Length: 400
Image (cartoon, rainbow, N blue to C red; front, side, top):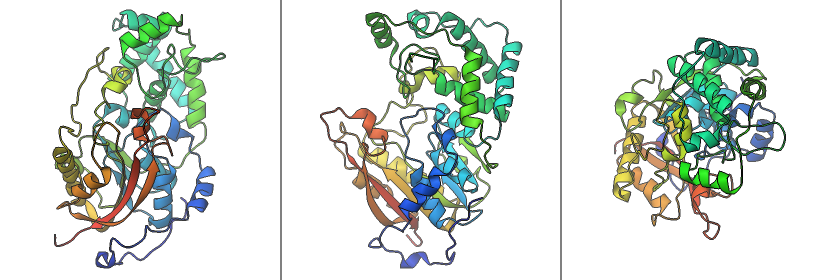
């Protein structure tokens, strides 16, 4: 485990005031150190709600002590949890999005290429045929028929059993390779031409493929699995300590599943107005057991019907988190906004702290989404200026 910064554990929260500067993190040194780490696994699948790995890594490497638990109640693709693993810190992630959970779980497993390929072969032996093959126009054009059959068999096997480390890794590899751009050489994805980050709607996709006369490649599925397994899991990592929970952080009972007091909470909640997390990932959600069509659902998602409601639901998460945190815990949040909502992200975030059990210690600019390709980048046109985000550092509030 990398040696972590040691600081006094009995520093009283009462002396921390908003006018204090953001705690020093030696950013240049952190970036250089991170380059020497094995960060490949963090990119196993494109996911548009993500902050850069250096953000949680620099905070934890500068300030966390050994054995202090790290929580992300909106863990997304598990960046905070992966940073914790690199630093040898125990960690818990929570998310209500099935794709987020699948990707984050893969960030904490210990396995290797041989085990992953063997798991894929074993599934294909166990599921020699399947009748659960979508057959409308989108599916006929999105995947070569031989590839689609294999993907459906692998899907069925993983839905039946995805308990082992190798199968969790295999699932994330398949999710990451499920759709993406065509290449002129060896295929890198299973699909016809598509974005890597989100799945376009079927009708649009079919029109695009027809207009550009594009056909899905006949990919060697097992060979692509092997290539990706070697890339992401070929270099051993230290054993991770912790777990990923599929649940809603607004539900206090979900937080009660965490056995140890948490000292660090580092997260980026959804931006106000971003309601397409589920429909934008409809194809990967199909692979995880969902329907073979777009479902415009907001199930278990923070509600966006008004600024007041959204702010209250964030406040509920901060309240729940405070109940399982150490008295000297720290809550660090990166937050921003999108252009089609006339709401100030800083005001929303500050409002969510009222009566939450936390008080703001310091804040700083997080830059715009263009610096780090964060959430709002995918929702702003080229004519719109990206909204500047904010980082907030909060500590436990006692007595009100």
